[in-house]
Length: 113
Image 1 (cartoon, rainbow, N blue to C red):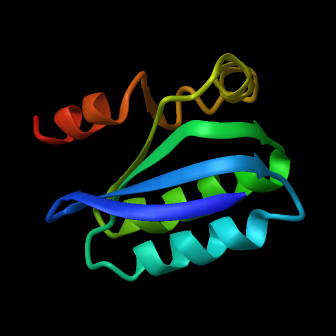
Image 2 (image 1 turned 90 degrees about the vertical axis):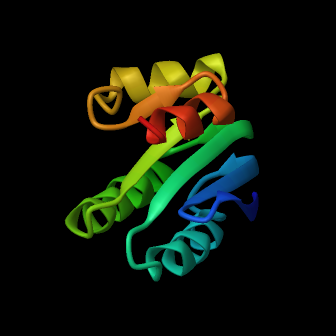
């Protein structure tokens, strides 16, 4: 898995993920999220459009990060998930826990409301 961060506004970071997120690559995700969590009020859109697979270890990292982010008054949302990832998140109940948008721009626009 590859992770890259871009800033689309001064207060919103987009974490772009590519490849497969599993027990072997979860440390890369955790490192990227740890850096973003150092921001005073983390506002993060996770771009899943390049992610082909995610297992429970990856989902766990997102859940743990969301708890820290929420405690600081920030938010974490997802964009661009393929059908597999969308169904996975819905099946495990994360659709109620995370905002999931079709595109990164949609997630950023929702943040401006």
